[in-house]
Length: 184
Image (cartoon, rainbow, N blue to C red; front, side):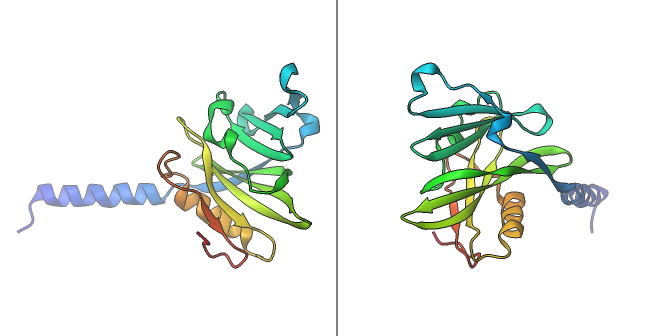
């Protein structure tokens, strides 16, 4: 016989799972053009690269740093201390000028940014999914965009499924090839 307590517990689980799946997830786009960002490069580092503070969604700082012909993008007031500030794609690269923010019920939890790269004359682009976290921000996945007509959709699916529970210190970055399959 099922008790009233068991019924109440079961009903609570159904309601909680319904509430979790009822989150509204959407994309919002902001520009990421360095010409519109503040150059905050320390004078002693100017010969090695540059650091820019750009305005992101809701005024959140987006830090874009360049060094050794590679771009590094991190977020928030402690952006320089985040793991993302040390992560980039493996080839010489530049960032695209549109930043896609993934929001759940209005709160950003991930970004998707296209990196254009050049490696020994081969050129292409990679979508980088970055987790936005209170204690750390880091790359979750790199999706090769060249030859993958569904790269943007795949990036959104990965952001929505993996970024919220991704642990920057424990979990490892995943790479996806032009066929959309994980390569590592």
